[in-house]
Length: 375
Image (cartoon, rainbow, N blue to C red; front, top):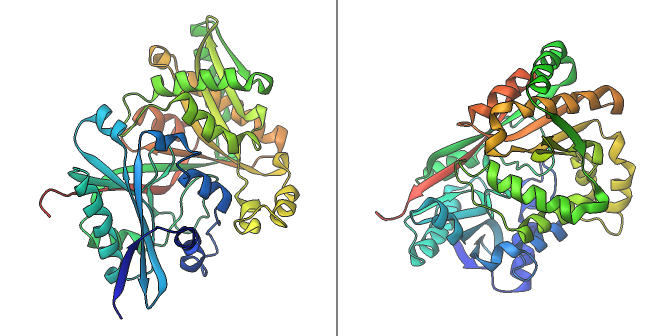
């Protein structure tokens, strides 16, 4: 029976698009169902400020009327303004283990991007590299940490079979408290402190909007030279922070100041995926009960989501001070492990400290690319 590719046009189509993962992952014990309300909000052009400057087309693959795959084609002009070229994106890719479904599905996304003048396709990004991104290619035996992707092992073969090749790897490190050489970390941190007038403080939730402004400034400065980076607006940062705010623990968010000037920030979040898994995509009517059972300060793991230092302060080694603070949280709060992710494979300035902390590179997420001009 042949595969039919169609665009998402109705509310029913969108519901099918959003619920397809439950079909794909029904036998995967490591999968964590996303919150349907959050997924809808991200895709909502009226609510997500990303879509003020971007557009997308969403596709479904069906066989015999049953959904077997999905993908989005995404046009982000800001990416091309920053990096040059004519690159479009694919995202939200899910598919059964069937090249006869995956290839026409990805081809539909490519044709849409080509119709917009794009000459290459990069992904997966949902919908950008400032959001969840990358396809898991190593470390399948571990469940994902908060806001990280997960997918079947065969996905790499599906996209390779459709002509995609590696563009960049995104690395995740697992840091187990008992594996850290604490004396070494403290020794390096002391040298950093003695080199300048440095202080660290936690986030002030009473000044949340002002703190978000600082995060935006630091983020766009610190990441400016990174592969694939596109600056975020204050509105985009605020949108991302809306869902995070409910789970932010002040003792896991720090700002560093040098001579009274804010120089960097580090954001970590409790790994609420244990609770989200039990919610099964919904906080209501019963999902919230499961969420509350996992009180934030009782969750034994967390993820370092972002750590950025303004360029003019990057030679000071401030990252070690953030790491030291997070290590302090382990015995005080009962944390047993943390994930640092994701880090570009090319960013040795971040990979080196992760290894120094005793981090084990235990997962790899891959960004794939494909030229469209010869098709």
